[in-house]
Every structure is written in C-alpha cells, then in structure tokens.
Image 1 (cartoon, rainbow, N blue to C red):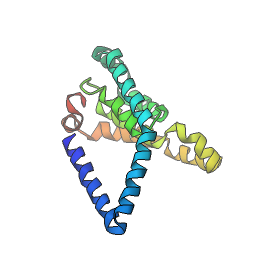
Image 2: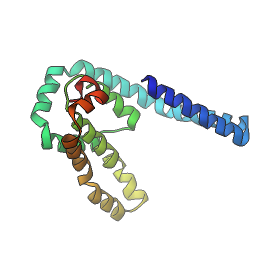
Image 3: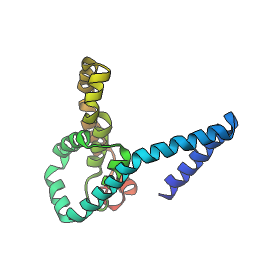
Amino acid sequence: MKGSFLGLVVATLLVTLGAFLLDGFELVWQGLLAARETFLQALPLLIIAFVVTGQIQVLLSREWIDRLWEKVSGVRGIFLSAIAGGFFPGPPYVYYPFFATFKGKKIPSYLFFSFIAGKQIYDFTRLPMEISLISPAIALYRNLITIPIPFLMGLVFRRFVSRETTARFFGEGGS
C-alpha cells in the first residue's frame, strides 16, 4: 500500500507540474475541477463496493471458500473464474476491494488471474454499448477472437508461476 500510494503521489506531482508548466494555475485548476467531477461520479460506486465487500467478509467463511475452490480448482476453476470476471459489474475500484475479501483464504492465485483477465477482456456489460455504438459484427468478432485468452492466461499462470512467487504478491492466500 505504501509503495502504490507513493507512486500515485509522485505521478500526481508530475502531472500537476506538467499542467502548471504548460499553462500555469489555470490548467491546474481545470484539472482539479475535472478530478472533483470524477470523484463525485465514482463516490456512489465506491460506497456500494465497500459495503458489498464488508458483507462478503461477514457472509463467506474461510472454510466455505476453501471447500468451494477445492471443487472448482484446476481447468474448471480457470474457466469459471474467467466467465465470472466477464459478468462482474463495475470498474477496477469496485472489483479489487471484492478481491481483498479473499486475502488469506487459500484460493489459488491463478483463479484470481483468470478472473481479472476475464473482467478486462470480456466485460460482458459493455457488449450492448459495443453493439449499438460500433457495430454488431465488430463486437461479435472481438468477442470470438478473445474467447480463449483468459483461459490460456490462467493455464499459463498456473503452469509457470511458482507458489512462492504468487505468495509474495498475493500474501499468504496466494498459493
């Protein structure tokens, strides 16, 4: 957390300095107003995401999660995780807190990886927009071409990334 916070602070300072050098305080102020607008739009989603995260922590016991993932680990788990990722609603600041609820629950990290890949590649919630704004044919081709990618990524992650490496990144639950 400290490293990501520091990285965001540095990035913020750099882009603010860039805006200042480009057009002075006026551009910096416009950026702050745009940030405020984005924050106000995202705030309801953030509140709901954290409420859902809290409820999931209370409802799902470690034992229940462990039994579930024992049944769906391996290739079947990769398939289900990728599909679930495609159907999970919301932007990253909604589904990453959801992931935080599973920390320390011994869920194989390749399932997390498949979920994130499925969310980023499939994201079925954007399909109606793609069909209406771009074209049904392009939306169909994009989805057909990308179908195997989250599965392949999950399989590769499962095969080539060691448990020790994932434990460093995911904590004690990333086996």
